[in-house]
Length: 272
Image 1 (cartoon, rainbow, N blue to C red):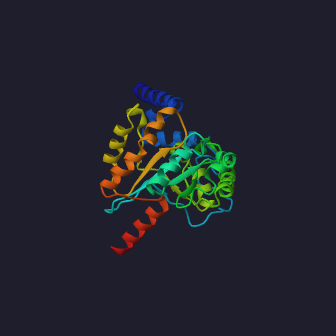
Image 2 (cartoon, rainbow, N blue to C red):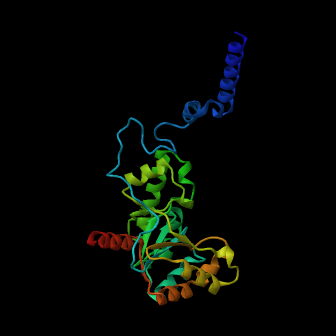
Image 3 (cartoon, one colour):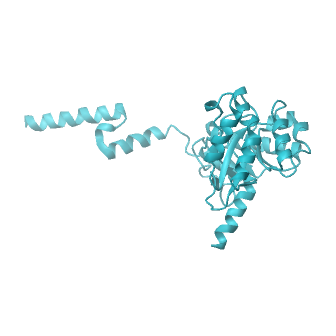
């Protein structure tokens, strides 16, 4: 009898400790239940983590695609620039691309596109534009309505400034939440992240060294992330951009926009 009471007492203590401390002492079943209770603190529909509006009708199309790059044996690379436009650097990037005949994809911040429309107006022929949010705030912290309103506002500003409506979305910092997916689907966007990012901080005052590093790291189907806005250290990549372009071309690479990269990959895949 005493042993039974002792065992019951130990179970009661363990159960109480589990409920107070996250459920670890209860094993798998207890942990799952406690985690489920904790998760209820997040909105079940329409919140930052939810990709649905709960029981409401989902105003989306067939879905949304998320891409980091493509798998292909063809030496193609998509050069992308985030956070612009800004007077300090965007013209430098556009001048370099024009000199070398390279197309790129610019993920524009809507508020900056509206404020600096003259920087990109009539200068993006052959290039592609994408949406990078209205003011570079974290979309993954927004609920579904706020994320959609943010992206819609940015969409309209970019279309007005450039004459081209964006069909691609890159969320700031690559942060994804369910609400971001839902908003992207409503706007019929493809979500584009990246395969490889510039590493300016590793090559201070060495544009040529940074260019060699990027040229060596690119693989067929790479989406390469750079910035035309930011701290001064990022100028290392932009000053080395001519070397990067010539180095990749020497390796047989062709520069394409993100949409062209995805189109070619789809054609190649269908032909197999």
